[in-house]
Length: 133
Image 1 (tube, rainbow, N blue to C red):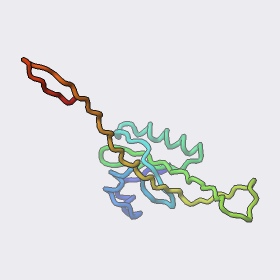
Image 2 (spheres, rainbow, N blue to C red):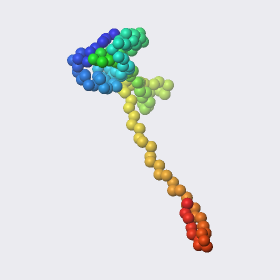
Image 3 (tube, helix red, strand yellow):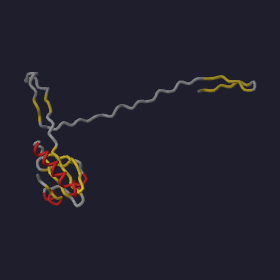
Image 4 (cartoon, rainbow, N blue to C red):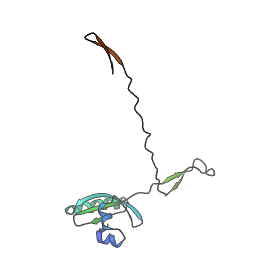
């Protein structure tokens, strides 16, 4: 398990502000996601978590700043199934290590239907008048 300071990560090319504010960083030939932040007095808890990740073969490390300790956990690569090849039988799946990103369009705007109007005829002191509701 590795414990880094912000200055040590700066030597690796990662700016201190990025480490302090980002949810995800690319370093050490992988993509790491911020897992948990602890006050410095809970360093033992952070070390236990990193040890559990190590047992599960998940890469992780700890960054120690002046006020807190952050556990960073490697993001697993999501395989992508390639299905559009006519030369491959349908019972064989091919996976790619390329990360899949999709763009989702917002739903179309729905215009509210006009409210139907109703006309009421009223009489007041012998005079008729109409009201639209």
